[in-house]
Length: 218
Image (cartoon, rainbow, N blue to C red; front, side):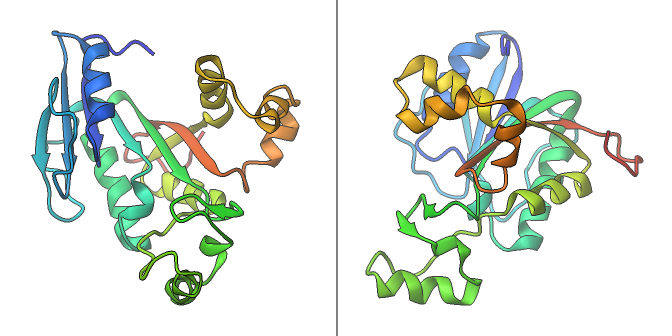
């Protein structure tokens, strides 16, 4: 994906490393803006940074060619707040733009933030006590979605989705040696890979804008 000259927004920049790397790909003809609810950056050069409050994005409609939401969605809040997040992403995205969207899967066996089996499988009211039981923390502040629920939320937010999980895994495998199970997955038939979407640990999508008046997703 050619990012040269693009206007890019990273939502929930955290350390700022991703925004910095994107700025190198964008070059002088483009612009990178990163937002977060707190300033926890370790890398600060190459992009603009804004603090935000709540779920709203302080930008006009159709501002960005690319929006990046990388392992942020599960921290946004409850289902209503997550839906608002997607609507805001859609609002600031240009009609010919795209979103890189990655999020952990609720039904992954080992929850990635606390490395605790079945944590995200639990009902929401049980997760924090379960976390305390195993002395991994006090309060579980994540709400990872299931694959099925997420697809429905994309549709309601007027976003068309393309599965990018296995393509992303192949890109990573070209950079660093993957574990044996990943290598086997990458050479599996496409129909077998598709069967794993409901339980695969990390879901990755490329999202594009649907016209706001449409009632169906192609």
